[in-house]
Length: 382
Image (cartoon, rainbow, N blue to C red; front, side, top):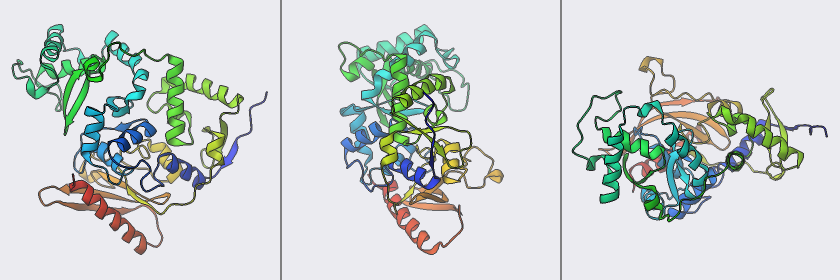
């Protein structure tokens, strides 16, 4: 059987497919409360965590853009009380649906078998100490450990406490999980105790993990490529391609010739391509770590914007600003705003406003300023 001919798809339609998949074309797609947090993380597949707090941190920011009534306490409840989300590494440290935990168990086993060189300084005694403390005293943070013999830092962000590295090693190996957060201060607990396991769940097979990655991308991206499914995981491309080809033969996926993509292949489900998405007039001030923008090449292909993350560049080399936030208006990225939260005064400081396209701006500027007012209330609210 010959391969099906790719279906031509324009960029405008592709953007609307992606925005719908990201639930950025609907005012409140997940409702509100802790259940909305769980639903949003479940749909997106992950929400990236980042430490930079020049404005509200990325995980709260990403959720706010899909849950207008979002409160930080909702994420606390989802993680620590409902336990509907947990933290682990995707392409970065992220919140992940607890229902998907079995797809990460093989990675945890691999970390136990062959820990990263990053943890070479962790001794068996360090590990025994933190595990003993957890078993006897319950959840703990690094601040609860005050009897470590301090060591020199190996990089500027490192802790001088050996126990911190030991907790991180146990986390990546799956023996402990992050049970709560206070800002960026993590509390750890034994994984089995936190989730109430009598018997640990069975880890997914490689074939199941491949299907999970593809299904997650199809759900949250709508239109996928090998690069978008295997973001920062090139080793998975061969298995994903094989599965895509199997699904194409069954008619479950359709090849797409995306405008401007050249030889880069794309696919979507027939159901996705059959849907018609009307233009939206919503305005979102996005995090640079939002799933819509984190894959820079994909964002550039579909929106024509090469977003630059410039926090680690010298000031004189920045074009958009230290922590520029892309502004989505309808289905276009129209501006980048470099904002800073003045928490003492409870106001946002506009460091730099950069327009990304030409055209009439008066009404657009008013809409962005309205979005900024909502964004400021989120910054300094509960």
